[in-house]
Amino acid sequence: MAKIQMKTPLVEMDGDEMTRVIWKLIKEKLILPFVDLKTEYYDLGLEYRNETNDQVTIDSALATKKYGVAVKCATITPNAARMEEYNLKEMWKSPNGTIRAMLDGTVFRGPIMVKGLVPYIPSWKKPITIARHAYGDIYKNTELRVPEGSRAELVVTAPDGAETRATVFDFKDSAGIVQGIHNVDSSIESFARACLSYGLDTHQDVWFATKDTISKTYDHHFKDIFAEIYEKEYADKFKEAGIEYFYTLIDDAVARVIRSEGGYIWACKNYDGDVMSDMVATAYGSLAMMTSVLVSPDGVYEYEAAHGTVQRHYYKYLKGEPTSTNSVATIFAWSGALRKRGELDKLPELVRFANLLEKATIDTIEDGVMTGDLYISSQLENKVKVGTAEFLTVVANKLAVLL
Ligand code: NAP
Ligand code: MG
Image 1 (cartoon, rainbow, N blue to C red):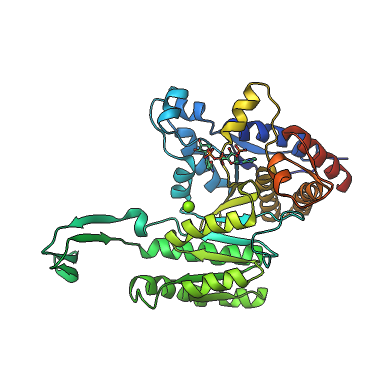
Image 2 (cartoon, rainbow, N blue to C red):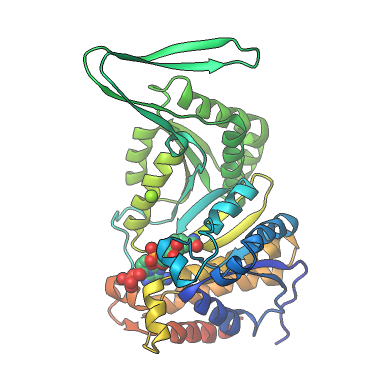
């Protein structure tokens, strides 16, 4: 069989530990035999980030802006222990944080569902994708302890020096606490566009919810920005695609999500997204079956797995012990990126390959062949547990047949 050709290169961001091992195996077994793979390679492994003073992370984000599609391996975010382990010059920032800031992107996380792995909410038949607004609110807050007898005020100083003041609270009878939070229109607008574009892209409804009945200026402003951008830029396209934008109160949204069967994008403010993404991921069963894509408002995509570098398995691997690490989310990062590249470059063969790669992966698990993490929770009767590399070999064999 002739290899599938590509036009534009993918931006390839290599990473750390067990996921770096899996990365290489996925390329060797699942991609290179079938695709004439074109990538622009950036090594975001911690050693090379340290060597380049993290310039490689910045370069990889710039390349992503240039080419439009990237695939990223999980990477170590250094802490004190890693400083010592890797003899680092500095405690480099999280690459994901750097890339997200440079692309002004929103992260969408969605579960990969397979027969045998039943969500804790039995009515969830389709994935629920959570989009978290990753700017501002309590994550960039200013807070103070307030002594009894004090008064707390909000003061906004205009460019001409004019002050607008509002009393937050008079702490006459008790000491207390006070908090100031903010957000900016440009970031909320980017978030709205990313969510609505991703809805169109993946053909799913978009839900958004805030507490606008209580927060009549702050949360209401989020609601207004979404409504305005939807009406002006997306309403016609949504109608044409037969999908819906739906706004409700956050409490109502939570109740509806639990009763729903899934199959939509849930846009969340920063705190809601932090909390709800952990709840939703847990309810679907496994972080190792969760994909993640960063979408910028100007249509740049970076695909990755939602989990980390699986350090504990890597140390076993280094000792030569057998491992059974789940590679599904990383496979889906590759298939997501290749499909998007195929769509943008009008290469139906590449899109077909990406779809069949996902099918081969899911079929393998549904046939009962799975890694240890899934083996524990799968309800299939004929299941067998296989090692990290063995799983990929079975997927490769299936893929060859499907192609
Ligand atoms: P982790 O790598 O996600 O692993 C935590 C645990 O979850 C593992 O020990 C394993 O449990 C289980 N697990 C996660 N992914 C799995 C998979 N694919 N297959 C099987 N089991 C899996 O999180 P962490 O240990 O907190 O972080 C390790 C490193 O990853 C850190 O240096 C952190 O900075 C980095 N990290 C990177 C990203 C990213 O690049 N996007 C995200 C998160 C964390 P058992 O050990 O019980 O088998
Ligand atoms: Mg969280």
